[in-house]
Image (cartoon, rainbow, N blue to C red; front, side):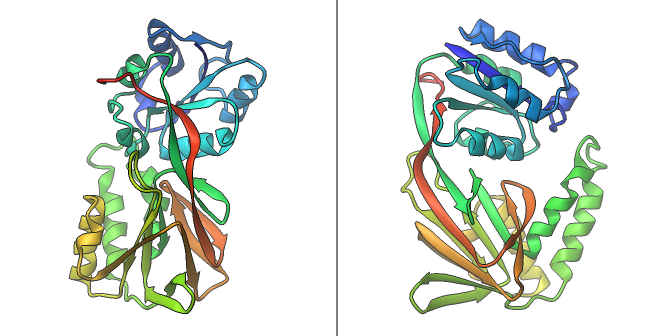
Length: 284
């Protein structure tokens, strides 16, 4: 199977590999893939994508964090090439959903030609995301994730300080969600999650309501553990189309970990089975 390889060598775990493109290429070739000619190490992503055009690849392997994978999905959506993600960031939630090993080289070695599937994707005012969007004040934390990269445990201290400051700020009912005609609920933060493989094609929305510092700390911990919907101060709904309104013309939100400013209201949509992906062999 002919394949192309895109590598964000500045991503978290990939930055620790001396020549990530060469190492990943070797692992993919050993699995039976014929790789297109590509630029060398350290080439900008746009140049790498330009090299993919016209190379005849059936599948594009993309190594990087969730933001890099989101960008790749937007480029490959509705196109002829299949998407094959490789973990390279700090969270790697998209790759984890597909059952890939946490190590990029191990993930590359696990792939084999031949078995394709599809993934649901979501959009926020047309912007694609694969895993999760956060609307409201908590999305500010995404600005500081660069502080942690490459800093080990010491690198988490600035992030922790910012997180505690954000949690201590007074909250207000700044956001409203609409799920139907004249049906609204209000809160200070919204988390929208894309369904995983095999789940119903519905977005899961969790609306956190104003609460004290302890309650917000508890909600943050449950969000990190994937159980935000279990909190008594959080309203959970699902739907194929959801709308979030704010009190300002622009809303701050994250898309798969990267912060954006988007004009409100933000209209979330699910696109079932919209992205063709290369799957791991049965049993892996």
